[in-house]
Amino acid sequence: MIPRQGCSSTWRGVVFGSKLLTKGMKWRVGNGDQVLFWKDKWIDSLPPLFHEVPVTGADLESNVSEFHKDGWWDVAKLRCVLPDELIQKIICCPADFGGLLRDSQIWFPSSNGIFSTKSAYQLLFNESEWSDPWWKTLWKMKIPPKLKIFYWLVYQGKILSNEQRVRRHLTYDASCMYCGGAIESVLHILRDCSRARRVWAQLLKPHQATCFFLTELRPWLLSNMCSKDAVMQGPWKFTVVFACWFIWKWRNNHVFNSVIEMPFCPRLVIFSAVQDWIKALTITTKATVKTQVFLAWSPPVHGTFKLNVDGSRQAASGCIGAGGVLRNSLGEWNGGFAINLGIGQVLEAELWGLLFGLKLAADSRMSKLIIEMDSAIAVQLIQQHNLLLLHPLATLVSSCVGILNRFESYEIYHIYREKNTVADRLASWSHNLDLGLYLLHEAPDWLGSVLVDDLLGLSKPRMICVV
Image 1 (cartoon, rainbow, N blue to C red):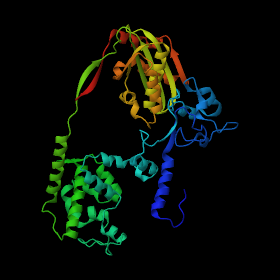
Image 2 (image 1 turned 135 degrees about the vertical axis):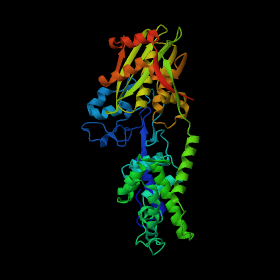
Image 3 (image 1 turned 180 degrees about the vertical axis):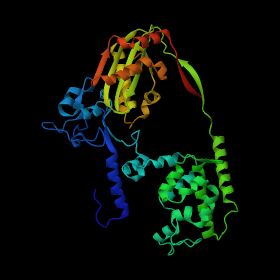
Image 4 (image 1 turned 180 degrees about the horizontal axis):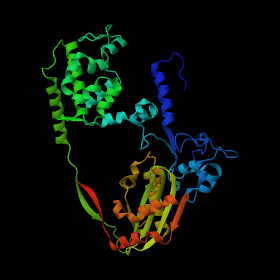
């Protein structure tokens, strides 16, 4: 859509919104029959054709399903047409290799695939100054919400100083009504006016006064907001925010209500407000109480098998992998696996690990199964699979649930890592392997001591929060 010259602002907004919507939509691969492998956006924010890959002789009308094989991606076929760096992104992409879910379009900037104003805003300003990390520092400050908004407006220079009012044609006089300064800017109101200097003179320590009045608005705000200094009444950054707020209020009283004088001792008013706020925080913030517990892997009951799975991600490279082990009631090894999944997120690794672990159990014709994994989110997704219509990982969850339904009975639990050591080691080991799945019919020698610890019920300490 292209807005015509002279069209209304409403229509221009609709056109702009449609472009943003197109930018944020991508295909979530189900069975892969509807998604064009080369031309559609399904891996990341660009179709594979836009990744500067050689496509000589490739069928540009190929569907994604043509690159599936034996319940996973056809790695050999992918290597014939794509570079390794793109293959590593593809093989961790969730897909429903069982063909139960259809392809659908989702909103990829959000974690659940559903459009939200917040995610659209972040997509819109992804590469602008609005992504400046200082905003996170401001929003995480434990100050009253109205002061956060005020400080945010101050940083942008948007509070209605006389300088701003002249720009908006609300007045013709940009001077300060109190001290007669030529231009009443935001910085003049909050720091440089003689009225404001009286307040800061009562608050500043001698070592702070040297450079306090030298910097421009934004560096001044940032340095004070990130300050680690403290006064008797609390953190200096709290004091600065409250002081700016009161200086602004007193200035408005002078301009609009003709209240010429400030309180006799501004310092006491500001310190009192800071203390009251800190007391309110102390009352509402509950102290976290932790206690030490000892955890150990335990075998399943007779006639039942236990599957432990785990995912792993290397922070520096983004490479992910997974591993798992099947054991019986005697703690004996009944099969294991490790899989290198390319580049992705740790939750993807956890769910891929669960899928391949379930396939291993189903192929071994086990009827009763207990599953343990240390990802609470993955367990929650499995338990709430009916609510994941647009979730980016819904196809992977659906594949797991499809296999789970083959068992006579199953139970799935979230456990702490101390009870999942064998799977954790296998997942970490997967980073040393080539792309793909490796089945382990016998336990690797290097796992011997960890397996013995589990057989002996050796417990490991962990600090946990007490509710």
